[in-house]
Amino acid sequence: MVDTNGPRPEGEAAPGGDGDRRAQLLDAAVDQVAAHGMADLSLRGLGAAIGVSHRMLIHYFGSKEQLLVEIVRLSERRQRDLLSRLRLEPGLSPADAARLLWQQLTDPRLAGQERLFFEICGHALRGRPEAAQFLEGLVNDWLEPLVAAEVAAGADPAVARNRARLGLATVRGLLLDLLATGDRAGVDAAMEEFLRLYYDAK
Image (cartoon, rainbow, N blue to C red; front, side):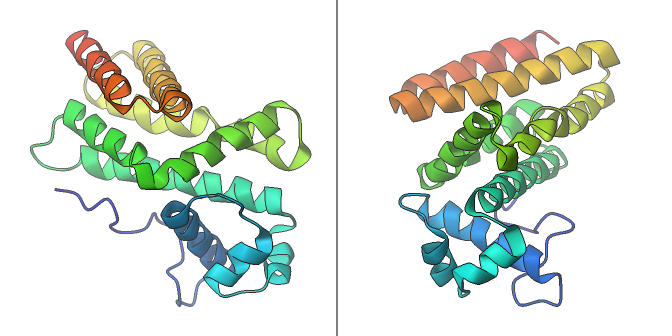
């Protein structure tokens, strides 16, 4: 079984290492948000939790919103890296890899992280400058690895892109459903039905 808290994505600095200080602070901020959510988060409170002043966070990230955008970006990258590791796990079917990723995404302890994702999306769609750049990779950053996996399994590239976009949209829609309704059983059942249709259609 793959350790979902295993190796950090390439390019991430390990806390306490010699890597870039900004990367270290961002890494610590993501871990803090993942563990404790976003309720009443302020730069001062986040800084205190990860051992720096809020002024230091402003120095490296410019503003609270820019830091939140970077937290979401890194969280998304970790999710993509987790999916890549799961797909390389011997004996694990693509459907089971998707199930394990779904379990990680819907872990109640990470609900604040998912709320932050949709909050930043809303800010970006309203044109707020710090968040607008987030839209650039919102879909395409996921499509590349998803399409590659489909093509490697024998799918036509055009069909693979359509399937990848459908899968991404479905997962995000069900995540929003879960946050809005709290109906974990219903959302999990819908995901199972989607996986059945998705993989049986191949």
